[in-house]
Amino acid sequence: MSIKIVALSHLGYDNPVDKNDLLLAAHVEGIDIIVGGHSHTTLNEATIVDKDEKGAQKDPTVIVQTGSSSANVGTLDVKFDENGVIVSHVNKLIAIGEQKADPEAEAILAPFKIGISAVQNQETGGIAVNALVNPRTGDPGNKGESVRNSETALGNLVADSMLAQGKLVSPNATIALQNGGGVRGPVDQGPITMGDVLTVLSFNNGLYSVDLTGAELKQVIEGGVSAVPTESGSFLHVAGLKIEFDSSKPAGKRVVSIQAADKDGKFAPVDDAKTYTVITNSYIAGGPDFASAAAAGRATDIGISDWESFAAYLKTAGEVDPKIEGRIVNIAK
Image 1: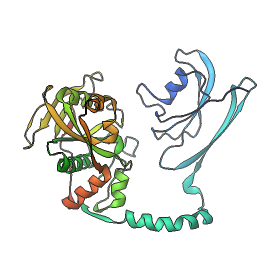
Image 2 (image 1 turned 60 degrees about the vertical axis):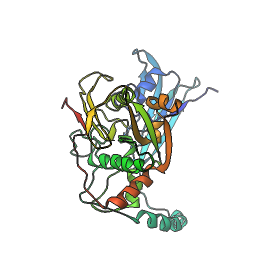
Image 3 (image 1 turned 120 degrees about the horizontal axis):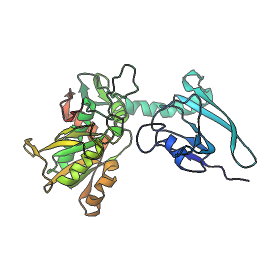
């Protein structure tokens, strides 16, 4: 009996970077099935990749993906020949919204829903003067703006909250960085609830205070803009920085200028040799651009999660009306 290999992927289906499911199927021999994620692609029909990266014929790889937000459940049946090669397949997407709720399951979940609703509906004390959208390029009518390739008002609010709360523990902090991939949903106009907070910041990341040199900071910013205009979760929303970059330039050489605020809020060009104290989340702090700082003991867990920080900031702030301010600007537009 031959071995069957199923890859569970979070690379994205066809996003135009150096990693996606189509490239994985072409470059890695022996994968029979890829069940993908990340790009929120709804594949009504499975994709078959039967040529390698050089265009030569290969055993087929079947790629499936169901979209996002539990919109569909996917089924896939495949048939293999005696050599373990896929010879046929049948896939189907089942729309969750068209299914009737199971009464027994509803009864089991009912007590838990009561407790969850109580937390979700608890008001933080913050009030959104205007609705705070969380755009993605696939949204109807969207012209390419996304929380993963452009500054947003909501991203600015999250970064501001991180910096304000981080300063309570790390008073030298002047900069905050939040990845666009970690900003997960919008906020409606009006009272902001804990449900809103947990929708926006769903991953329970801790906050870190990290001392970076100016040179290290520039490298982090370069990484954040490397995929623009393509959506990338690594795109950064910032506080305490003014950044200009040019997406027409090669990745790694896109940053045109970076100015950083001091404790008095005055901006000056980033100095490669100077040290800047940055508040960020544990996901970013655990990444390769922060490895040197972590190894040298320049990264400190400040003991609060991102969502707790956001909720505490909103309680103090009351009414919030963040704007797109030109904190991070693509001059190629």
